[in-house]
Image (cartoon, rainbow, N blue to C red; front, top):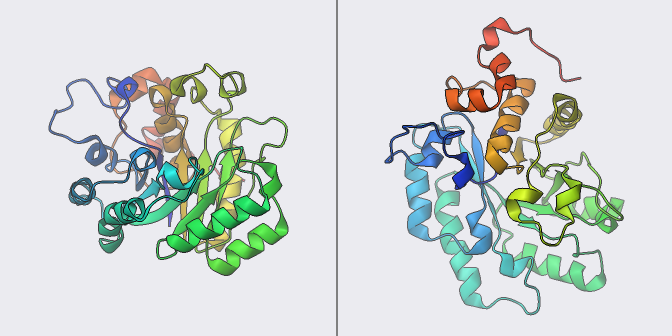
Length: 294
């Protein structure tokens, strides 16, 4: 099973593009997107633990797609704010939000995402061990961005513990982790952040500027080959597009689905086709020759 989808769904700049004009106000974006994708990555869980009632509502909204599983980022107190170990109330709050999704069979993975500054030091290895031990009863995926983690022993230890290594595409500079194709658990994980290097490293750049990037089909072909190799070893693969600005993550997610032979659920939104005409060749797949991503 390969699930492809974007990271997040609450973006004002998706209105009128991803979410078509006239979309009923009572139609939740998650329910709308679940018609097209089999996964979405929850980003709000990074900023604050998921409230149990929100998790219950998401589960209800997914009734129409039995194949759908969410992935969710771990709360930033465990990944970015590392001055001291978070209190037990934070652990309890994280669990209270994730448990309903896990119990309902809707939680594909918990993503533990660290910043580039999280290098492979003794202290950081100890921190990572404590985080993964605390949440070991969830399917875990680790995202690191510094090249110091690109070591055989790292992948071997993750494999021994059944923790997925997140393969990423990011703008590269000194000691950035380059694209990888690693499978260390039953879950395979891929995240595409875009390659907007000019804004990624600019201190005054906002979120939208950093993630303003549209992958070309040639660039996606590189990842289609990697995903296929991951697919051979993992039971479930999650391919997440995080280049969210103006729905570009949705565009590239549709293109990845097409390249992987993942069946679409219904025709693409006309508003998205108007904004990104290159998608029109995917809107009638029966008229298109099947392409081998290799």
